[in-house]
Structure formats: structure tokens, C-alpha cells
Image (cartoon, rainbow over all chains, first blue to last red; front, top):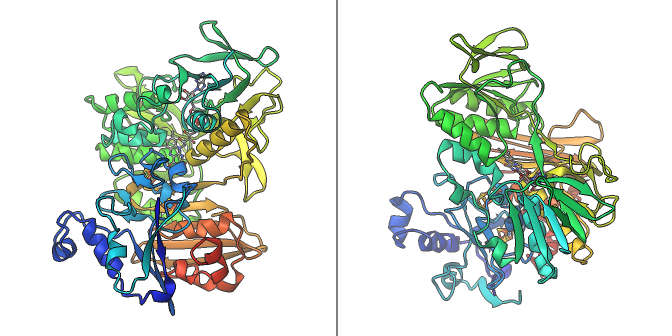
Length: 147
Length: 426
Ligand SMILES: Cc1cc2nc3c(=O)[nH]c(=O)nc-3n(C[C@H](O)[C@H](O)[C@H](O)COP(=O)(O)OP(=O)(O)OC[C@H]3O[C@@H](n4cnc5c(N)ncnc54)[C@H](O)[C@@H]3O)c2cc1C
Ligand code: SF4
Ligand code: SF4
């Protein structure tokens, strides 16, 4: 499986990863529409973590022993043993926030309008996740890891 | 003789099946489940009542789950007796089922105190899908306009929200002075109470229901309740949501040791060889209180079931423990509350607070010797998991305490040593 690695020394804290993630996870896939018009509001699943002078972008680590999947009250959060990815099915999700409580990275976003959670899916439709592909400084990297 | 027998197949039982199959792909597993479909999300029964979810949505595993895991599932069957000397469970219809390893994952049953009138039509408990179906059916009928919910804990709040969404006028009666008192301190509780009242719920703290009276024209049907102080509240339904008690009846009368729940060690084994217990029925390790106790929570039941399963299949595994930990979504206020969130005054504890009334945010940390032992996050919970990590791993936060409750607290604010520990840094 792939893991997205943040390279703190290259991150300038511009936040473009969040912009491209949000757009990729919108219906229109258009930056302007995604930010201004879409309802429910699309959500970025990557988060720029800043504590000056440190900054880096973080998204779901697709943990090996995923606490969110073990804790999920509905089976919506699921560790796929074949791909190693932790997937989330919004149709099953009841928005109980149990996964949010147990994610050590605070990597799960709350979609208040949809009453469900949202998190990184490594852009299943793309070869390279949008945040990685669009970071102008090469501060995000996709590496192959064993699972 | 089946190698593994599991009684009860919800959170803990399913966790055990999956763990056994990770270790032992072939050993015969027999599951005995009173409920036809047992692998539904119990916490979702309130969404069933409000109309947001049906049984299909509630299923936590797909319908081929038994098949895929090569489980012989005896569904709709109740285990009636246990004979540990003969390694046998006897079903209600008399059929004996022998085991090499047994897991008791029988969960809890609702606690219903003795009340005059409790047998009347219109009195409900709220712990399983059958309860939810009965209640939903009642709400659909003419003359089901008001309800009294007894108990303002997690389950009471969840059913109150569901009833409110269905247009039922609810009176929420709670013996303690505050709602959600096992989870929240008075400040947090008052914030929630204000929102619950705003949604139209009549909250009555500090009282209980003395007796249930019938309707003037039909005494067999719920018509009102009489509260401790004598007030009479008219209602068409009464929902008893005081709490659950471990279903230890299979262990009772055997040599399996029980307190309130079944006593287990860190491998989920009871004092009797080859007999394990997990989930709401067992008393398991609380890493904050450093003692075993009843902690009826879904994520813990799953983990405990897994630990039992691994050990039953021969892979020695220790349970790392849980604590009182809940997240709540009800009435639109996200809440995470863990551990000693509402401790008695104690000079050894340090309390950190932050509140933004306008934003509806309240955050609290309880520290002992610079380690987080309790927390409540209300209104803004997305970073709560990071703090739970620090709590669970007993990280000394002395050097970075001041950042923990800041609005912009995040991973970058953690010291390098912690970020390394979390694999965020080489
Ligand atoms: C309304 C509600 C809301 C909740 N919300 C939350 C929440 O938000 N967060 C949280 O963490 N937890 C929540 N819980 C608690 C959670 O559902 C339980 O902790 C969890 O279901 C425990 O799992 P278990 O497998 O131990 O037992 P159970 O889920 O109780 O399952 C036990 C199973 O065993 C069967 N059984 C019992 N005895 C026998 C027998 N003799 N023979 C055959 N079968 C038997 C029962 O019928 C049942 O199917 C909630 C519970 C309720 C009722
Ligand atoms: S959501 Fe959090 S806990 Fe779950 S896999 Fe991702 S990083 Fe791990
Ligand atoms: S919020 Fe959704 S994904 Fe998270 S634990 Fe609850 S049901 Fe599972």
C-alpha cells in the first residue's frame, strides 16, 4: 500500500494541499464552485498543522492497527486487509464521532451538515493523491509501504 | 466437539469470531444467539426510531458474515444452562452444545426498578432492535403524543432525541441533579441541558418515577406517571433507560466467579479454565482507575472480544484496557468525554478549562502528575483524539501543557519526542 509522507523541511505552510483535497472531494471538481456554491460543503481531508516555525500536512495514516475501524459503532470505518487502506462508507456512518475520539492523529473531519465523518481515501480515482500531486514544494510524498 | 462456542454475537461475539479466524482458519466455531440478526449496531436503535435508519443500514457486517467465517450460527436460540465440568452449554430446547473453549458475550439487560404500574401497556425498555420496533410502532399510532423517559444517561438522551424528532413531547426524568452525570461535569451538563430544553424537552432533574398510572378510560394503558415529589405528568409512553446490568445468568450457579459482572483476567479468561467472557457482561480493566469494572461500551466490547478470541485460539494477547469513554452526537452537540472527566475534588488533580460561550465550546482536561487522566471536549472535538492518545500512552505533558486547550492545538504543537513516537518524524 501507499502512505503519504509529509516532509516538514519542505513545507512552507501554503495550504494548497487543503484546497486541492477539498476540490477533489467536491461534486464539481472545480475550485471556485467547490468553495462558493456546493451544498453540502465539500471538506478537505488533509490538514495543515502549524505551530510556527513548524508546519506539515497530515491526513489519515491508514494505520495498521486502525483504532477508528475497531471502534466504529456501525462498520462504516473498515480496514481493507487486501489493500491496507482504511475506508469509510458515508452511507453506513451514523455520525456518532467515536472514530474521532480514538484517532491519534485527529485526522477525521466532521461533516456537520451531512452528520457523518470524512477522511483521506488517498484519492481512489487518481494515480497520485491530489495533495501530493499539487504541493508546489514537494513537501508531500507517496511511498510504498508493506502492510 | 466444536472447538469454540460463543454465546451472544453482537460487538464482543463478532470481535471474537474475527480474531479466532485470524489465528485459526479451520477450527469449528458455533455461535449461539438469541437475536435472529445480532450483528446490528445497538447504538443505532435511536436512528431506527427516528426513522433515519432501517435494519439494513444498521448491520455492522454483511449477510454472508457467518458463511465467510465458516461459523455455525444457531440464531434465535437461547443458551439456558452452563455445565463447566462437562464443558457443555444447554440450549433452552434441551440441546446440549459441547465446547473446548467457551466465550460468554451475553451483554447486558436493561435495569428496571420495581415501580407500581410497570406492567401497563406503553412501558418500554430501550436496548435492542425489538424494543426499537415496538416503540416505533407505538409512535406510529394515534394517541402516542407524549412520553416520559426515565434516566438521562447516554441511552436516555438517545431515545429522547429520537422521540423528539418524531414529534413526541418528552419529559426526561433524572434522579441525579444533572443530566449525563456519569460523563459530564455540571458546566458541560448545563450546556447540554439548555440545548435539550430548547428542543422542547421538559427536563426534570433530581426526581424519579414513583408509579405509573393508567388512562382514565383504560387502566391497562399508560396514562401518566407520579414523580418523587408527587407531581403527576400525563404521558402515553414510559421508556425506562436507567442503565444496563451484566447478563451473568449463565455463570450464576456455576463455579465461574462473578461480581456485578463476570470476573476476568487480562486475557479475558474467567477463573474456570476454557471459559472466557467479554463485553458488557464482563468486568474489565480500566487503565485510569487501575481496576477492573463494568464498562458497557461498544468499542471496548469489540476489543475485549478480540482479546478473548486470540487467547482462545492460542495466541497469547493481553488487553491494554479501556476507560469510561463516550462520544455523543445528540441534539447537534458533538461531545467527547473520557476518564475522570468529572472527578470529586482532589488536591492531587489539576484541572484545565477553556470555554467560548459564543461558539458553544467547552474543553476540560484533568491531569494527575502531569498526565491526562480525564477530558471533556464539547462543541469542538476534532482534535480530541490527539489528547486521548496522550492520555492512553500516559505521556507527561508538563512541558507543553499550555498549548493543549488552545483553539489551534494540533500535531505540530507536540514536542519532537512525541511526534517521533507517533511516527510523524524520523
Ligand atoms: C441505545 C443504546 C445506545 C448506545 N450507545 C452507545 C454509544 O454511543 N457508544 C458506546 O460505546 N456504546 C453505546 N452503547 C452500548 C453498546 O451498545 C454496548 O456496549 C455493546 O452492544 C456491548 O456489546 P456486547 O457484545 O458485550 O453485548 P450486547 O450488544 O448486549 O450483545 C449480547 C448478545 O447476546 C445475546 N444473548 C444474551 N444472552 C444470551 C443467551 N443466554 N443465549 C443466546 N444469546 C444471548 C443478546 O441477545 C445479544 O444479542 C449503547 C447501547 C444502547 C442500548
Ligand atoms: S482515521 Fe486515524 S486512526 Fe483511523 S486509520 Fe486514519 S489515522 Fe489511523
Ligand atoms: S462517526 Fe461514522 S465512521 Fe465514525 S465511528 Fe461513528 S459510525 Fe463509524
